[in-house]
Amino acid sequence: MSDVLFQPLAFRNLTVKNRLFRSNISGRFDNYDGSGTQTRINWETKFAKGGVGAIVSSFVPVTIRGRIVPNYATIDHDARIPFWRRVGEAVHAHDCKFILQLSHGGRQRDIPGIEFAKGLSSTDRPDPLHGFECERMTTAQIKEAVDQFAQGARRAREAGLDGVELHGANGYLITQFLSSAINDRTDEYGGPLENRARFVLEIVAAIRAEVGRDFHLQMKISATENANAMVPGEPRGNTIDDSIRVCTWLEEAGVDAIHVSGGAFFPHPRNPVGDLPLDELLKTYDSLVASGTKTLRNYIFFRGKLSGEFFQKRWRKEAGKVFEGVTLADAAAIKKAVGIPVICTGGFQTASFIRAALEGGKCDAVSIARSLVANPDLPKMFASGLDRPPKPCTYCNKCLINAPENPLGCYEEARFDSREEMVREIMSVFSAN
Image 1 (spheres, rainbow, N blue to C red):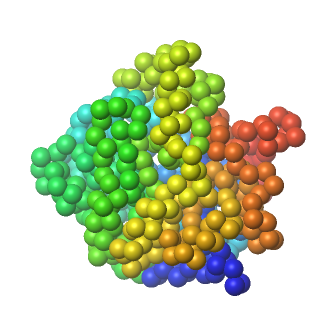
Image 2 (cartoon, one colour):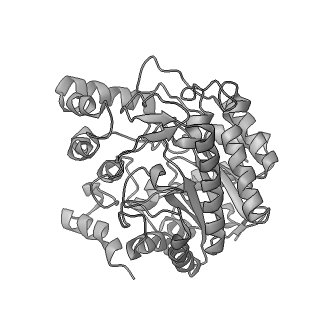
């Protein structure tokens, strides 16, 4: 097709049929031990049916200690390979590629699970917002984590998947090493940016040694961290200039694409873009109360009328007024500096806006998460000539707030004819063929 949205995108080792990717998003759809379920397959398949060219899986832990919540499928040992093969086959049946996201939460873990061990991190300081505790990784633990990522990539390849993505964004373990706001080490993994990037570059080298150069490997990065967005006094963290340097090193190391995001923690006012509905947050934040040293304080703060309003106003101020394409400027800056494709995430749901970004050379593809939760067949709508879905995502983030306790789905009742219709749509993933 002449429409740039539906032109194939060729990476070094992979070709995707169009420029619309499903970004990493999922709910607690799997078993407590990290084994996968048919519900997960149903979840991924509905977006493949909707017309995206590729799906980036949700956060897939390379080790149980690296998970952020229970009930997410893992890639921590070879017994997981058959399940991920089934996922890939289901997605491939709809001419869609499947890229598995290799992930490790580090200190950022919403609901740790029964193991209750402290998270591993570049630091031993709890995160400033929730107080998630952690221990500073030893050199031996760093080497072990590097191998866990490499073995995850090997398993993804043996499962017949189309590639892997390193989750180096949004405050998770790789970010915790890269970030000047988080990494306070004084050894070879801390200090100047070159040292802070050592961990991820060792991961890239280990993956290439394990799977070769002909398997797709991309990296998701928080190009601008804004680590002080909700906690005044915290350092700002990495800037776009820092991230440009890291991306050039990643390209030299053998990474095939850069996936641009933002924020040094998750959720962040600029990722995912939109509101923070306190009334919804209070229904589910209790799941996190025992997870960090500051979570009970936060819960009480959110419940207070004045304090809750203060928090929400600060969130909205930091979020700003631009939702669609919030990270596009960073993606454009990185694209000028590297020769590999750049994927951009950030609230996309308007065909003309995406088309202008692609034609203007700001990025090579866009990734979409919550706007696809609202409209899984969004690519088909674009192909039919619609510029924007009849019932667009409202950026309310009720889907995000409900995720710790309830099935992931769109919880904006205004988008449905009734609450019953909304619930049916949310629950449909449990019975889809």
